[in-house]
Image 1 (tube, rainbow, N blue to C red):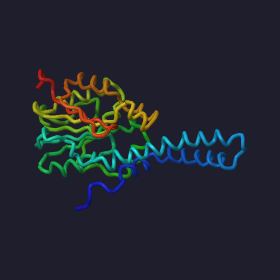
Image 2 (image 1 turned 180 degrees about the horizontal axis):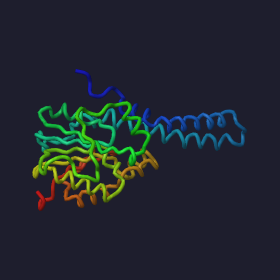
Image 3 (image 1 turned 45 degrees about the vertical axis):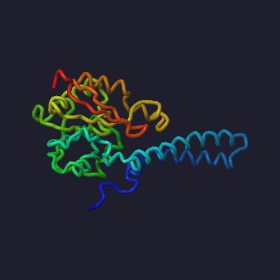
Image 4 (image 1 turned 60 degrees about the vertical axis):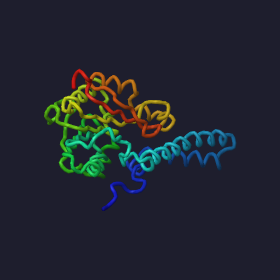
Length: 254
């Protein structure tokens, strides 16, 4: 059987989907390196400092990204605890780029899996997502859903729902809470929702500098879950840069 992921697939995807950023950084690095090595003496010190300030964070970010996506075991899902039983029905949630339906279908071969993609080209305009969609076809049977509308599922019908590095793309807090209320509606009384995300926290700032602003804070996520009628049963640090929240319906709603 072919491997579900190829070596260094994670960091390679980051680079090729965001190649414009790395191209600009590489070009700026070449200019600064030329000034540092052969420019006017008065500018060499400053050019060297700027070169270090430009390259070191980028190289550090790539190393951390490689660790997270290629060597931490994140995509093997061994971190899903034994307390989450094999579900009869499984919902995966993606935002234009689905990396989890295939490995979760492999992990839970007897589950009835529905892949839901809430990507909307008018609202999710990141060029990296468009490139990812061209590179990877959707999981077979994927259903396009709207975060502002009802999910095409019955109440209490899903045993396990997994939103993996996707739900942060819902930028509006009200819309995000409404979407999670829909997930809570379709979740079985004993079901589990797993939300895996980078957080807007010091670790991710060290890894991605201002890029960490694209993520939501832990406080924001907790407010979303509370508004949706979900309670945190467990919180797992997959790595210092990735957090998974294990959620159930509030006792009053179950």
